[in-house]
Image 1 (cartoon, rainbow, N blue to C red):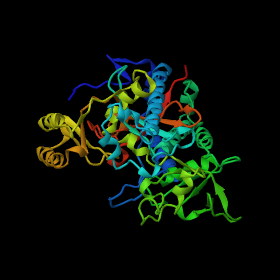
Image 2 (cartoon, rainbow, N blue to C red):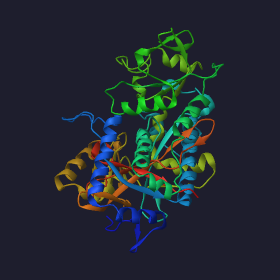
Image 3 (cartoon, rainbow, N blue to C red):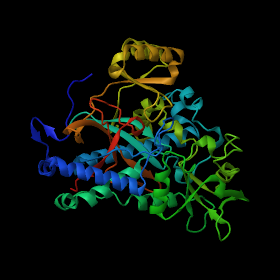
Image 4 (cartoon, rainbow, N blue to C red):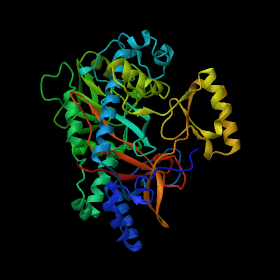
Length: 471
């Protein structure tokens, strides 16, 4: 494990150019004011209702994700490269999904093993042969990025189903602008507030073939017990669309309808925030009370669009992740702009041997895991934890991948003793419809515990505002 980390603000004792304006800002802020501002930020988050439920925990079911006031900053040049790489990846992932639910050319060409695709639990046979509007399967792609040096960025994982956290990107900016207006006057920071308009436009642009008018868009939520419910209602408000639960929708004839006080209203595009398994009890889990009976029949007949499409989860499987650079070369004929983290697949005998021999130095993840659960951070684990995890890997090797422990970059962060470096990652949100677009920035997640590399909010991480300086 690397003992030195790239500090995004300081290099060789000097402040890097994008952070120069922040040096005086921190120097001029006494500790009392900093504490006051931090308390103000928390009060704003609480009043607005930005909370995050953590399953399986006692205490406050709706707790705040800690917000750190020290922003993360990218230059316009840095962002331009990231944007090109993110869009390239989103195009390739969608081309892959279109292919594997069609002719499967990449499998026929021997570039990806058939078993990883067709035996994948996220592969939905129910949509094989169906082409969604504009050929788009994943409409909101969250690409998790880490930085290890001035020009070194790696993709940690792809999120092609329902990536969450965009409400924090928007609210972090809103609160920073409210608390520190002078900072925004002194720095030319690219805005992120166009995101709801871009999202609405993206969803409308993939209206189904039977839609012959301005499409009606809704957000389908599992309900207020879901950890991201705040985000669902927040986005519905900002887009000016209805937030619905399964019981608010029904199928009649060739269409999906929404119950309203003025009678049924036809729905054309559903931005779903529930998993495939719960979408339609007639097609998937028969015990689901969250979905809409008959929804998949209407979807396959062109009466409604579901965003992101059922079956899109194959593309963000952690075993499939290792083949994304190959997808870019195969479908786009281009060299990957953003690199993958070197990855060992425990389902391969040689890889398994290497992983078990080097477990204390590696990060191991479940292929279908998320949220920082079901993983081992070797350098931070005890000998007993390593041995226990080794047994789990031996029992089901195909369920795990392993990666080296990257030297994640650090960004100055306000902590109790003052300002200290903490490790960060970045999740930009790429919208795919008639166009491929993303706002400049994303959600920076920060590991608030000293030395920790796990930034997930479910594991105690916090969030920061992400600035892209206008060129």
